[in-house]
Image (tube, rainbow, N blue to C red; front, side, top):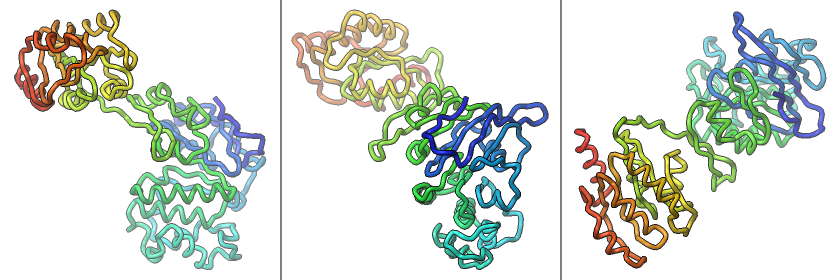
Length: 415
């Protein structure tokens, strides 16, 4: 599957059908992507998907099958100095095994270049010092690179990229060892380079930052491109859950407006330990979280969509029954919720107000074989007959809080 071309501009980098194998095992299989000036392409995917291998192939470090063109010229036809003028690379690991200072590591980026700041000689350390200053590492210029922390090394390596001043940047998880402040700093600097006309492919694990800072995303899995396009096209629940083999929730960040991905915990299910929550108005939120954390299998309903209980259950993938906001509970929802209650070992009637829309939840509570009623706050009744129906229900226990409900259920299971 090929990446989508963003426009008609000639690509600075064009990779076609890249394949790479080790001892007969395919690591990359027909991967194609391109990169034009002024864009950042995020390379995402699980560990072992082939992201680092692809970047090494694009640099010519590995003997791949396929073609890589830099501004229309075959990568293999360019000598090392010419490659250095056109493409730069930051790996996950720097030369920490050698006794170089941070300044010397940065100066390595000046090979074949005239310098980021217009100086004619890369061996004039002023250029390298200014690059270190830009990333906040000027104070470590004389320090042995091997003695730096992982995050500090990443900043020094990024300074080397700045000195190299190539139009194409390949960055292999440049923020992996950085704290959240420096992580943002590096990506903001990358955005500045993009606005100056440079282009970058960045392998990145933080999907939220990928969605925020990348113009396009390429999803790799098992060495193949599974999806490619705008972040809104690739940040897809089905695609990501299949690639990362985990459940996720996708929302739009109110702070940035970009998509935000949250992995959902895999809670252990205890066989024969099912709890059905009849909630509403947020009354089941804390109880749901506590039960899941304790390893119980939870179902919910009947809830009204847009209610905070329903939103939580939906986000966590909890089996539930819901009706539209403000609707009364119809016969189908009543039947399906009754089936969940019949399956559950315990049913909890949370402390929500009773109105016409949820009155039939009291009927459902009355059919539970083992019922706990939460009385943590005074219950309001807005539907005719609601109070009488509620008072006719005979629970096995009453509880004043979600913590007390959990204690009673645990005690019943001998925990």
